[in-house]
Length: 141
View 1 (cartoon, rainbow, N blue to C red):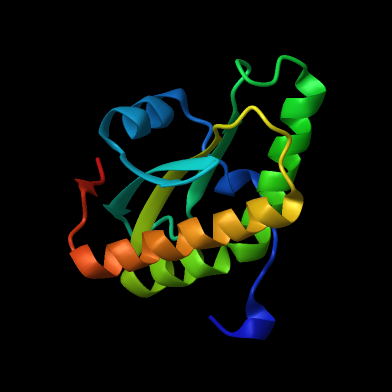
View 2 (cartoon, helix red, strand yellow):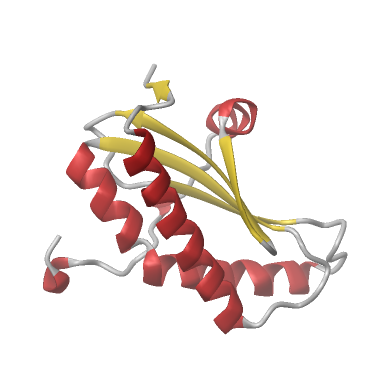
């Protein structure tokens, strides 16, 4: 995708909201880790939905107060929004649909710069893994 046409947005249609899809993702998905983040993902051969669908989660176990969880989720969404082009370009080029969950798994308050670096590393690892395997883990329903 050309640089000037790239949209740095994170809209509702890019969010993974369906309970069935979320359950399927956690039952059949594969995992990548870049501490303090964990990513669970599934890729499907589907030309109708080239935008990756993303779920962002922070454990209540580590952050009892909603304000802390919301702050971390806001940082994660922003970091993903800035770097999602890595995944979007791959999905469009290979006509695949990707669903993923990004989970913050630490009890400490993160630095925004560190989280952005971790998100970027995870997305690059994910695309590299896709290119190495070449196969699609799940076919669309």
